[in-house]
Length: 226
Image (cartoon, rainbow, N blue to C red):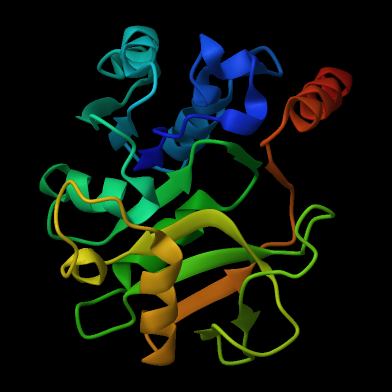
């Protein structure tokens, strides 16, 4: 699942007429980088949620056939936050574990390894496997602590930042009501306290493309690489 329902307030005015995942970087929309990299790792079934300007996303990506994948759309009347959006999409995602990626990050993660991690999840636990990255300048306090045994904890130091990439078992969202906004962090912290969240430290490229400045910087980096 690619999360694409956010309004992108920090990206305004760019997002007044274009959904944030469709903003171009390195010659193509940000979300297309995800689709192509996921397809290269063997993913062919996608669910994408949307709210703000969702029709623009559907018009641009269609059913996914142009990329060699199949896209199922999960529209939201109003954005349901991360956990709420995933809960709303569960009928499309099915009963097996799945991978979820924020539509507004740029990352060279090993998606095949994340797929393997997803296959290890179960209703009995672990319920989630997260990618963590070094704390960026705009989030120096971090989010969670990664222990030596691979479990992630809500408390303690040193802390790393959640990359917005993870694998989840549907049971993590079972207690949420549909069509109700809900954030992901409280669910994850509850599961962490039960010892049911694992993860790994991604040390490669990762950028939270959350502002016009960071978008422009990434675009310049990709242009130089070409």
